[in-house]
Length: 121
Image 1 (cartoon, one colour):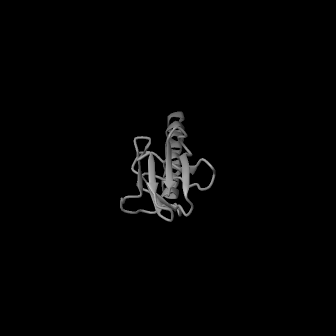
Image 2 (cartoon, rainbow, N blue to C red):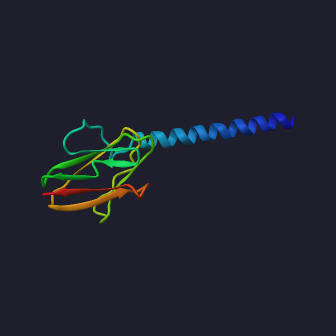
């Protein structure tokens, strides 16, 4: 009887984790701030816990698109607090138009050691 109860408890715990994980993945897939876009000249790739390129210079009024090609979620956050993406699951993207000239340093909200800068001229 005790073995049956233990098996049920393990099964219930496993199912709970599966549904929890599925909900997290589904939430990331429905991320309204994330879009899928093709790579272009104003694209930053997120891979191996780094922004590539880490520094990007664009024209004022241009958009920059970050695409998460890593195996874990990331979040783009301007150091100034000017903008913040939703959490980007692997394969998701975030775009922002830079309407003012200047340098905007940013980092990953989940992994703060990841840093980059967009400079609009």
